[in-house]
Image 1 (spheres, rainbow, N blue to C red):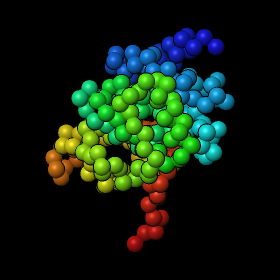
Image 2 (image 1 turned 120 degrees about the vertical axis):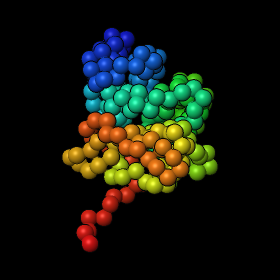
Image 3 (image 1 turned 90 degrees about the horizontal axis):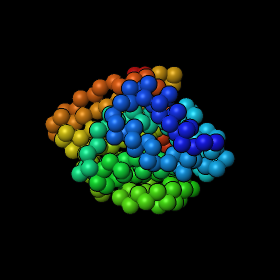
Amino acid sequence: MNLEQARYNMIEQQIRPWDVLDPAVLSLLSVVKREQFVPLACQALTFVDTEVPLREISGGDERMLSPKVEARLLQELAIHKHESVLEIGTGSGHMASLLGHKAQQVHTLETNAALVEFARGNLQRSHAVNVTVHHMNGAQGFVEEAPFDAIVLSGSVADVPAAVLAQLKVGGRLVAVVGQMPIMRAVLIRRTSEVDFHTEVLFDTVAPRLTGFGEPSQFKF
């Protein structure tokens, strides 16, 4: 495989047509080598428009977000170099590495111990010195380092927990994929005051569920 040609094709044929037009984001996708974060058994899927399975590492159904969804969420967060970022759902560490290039400090949370070690190794090899991987459930956020300028949920949830929203600074942004199969939507939530939040629907998509967030009750009262 010609890696650089495949990377170029991914950016130009998948990501740019999905309204990812920020030159800094597009350039970053060339700098951060996606293949270094993909399990060996799935290398052929590195630049394909799909969610790469992490089963080889995790033993479960965890998957990387597709390249275009990951890039679009990164663009919508509009991170600045002085900002602190929380990621929930580290997976292979690829999104954390992208975030690390744009932010001052990134904390990323992962429940699967094998993925924690996999991501740490990947991030170390990519010299992401401002990214810290924590082995913990992200459903309650990360109070120890809150508040954050930006939060990204690298997977889907039925609803964004209030405890996570509470850890946004005023003026902070959160992106997540919210909903139930077959209808999910990527949303951008801005904290506009101590008590107010504004939600913008970005696009329809589907994404693997984050572990540990639970599901809403199906009972109706």
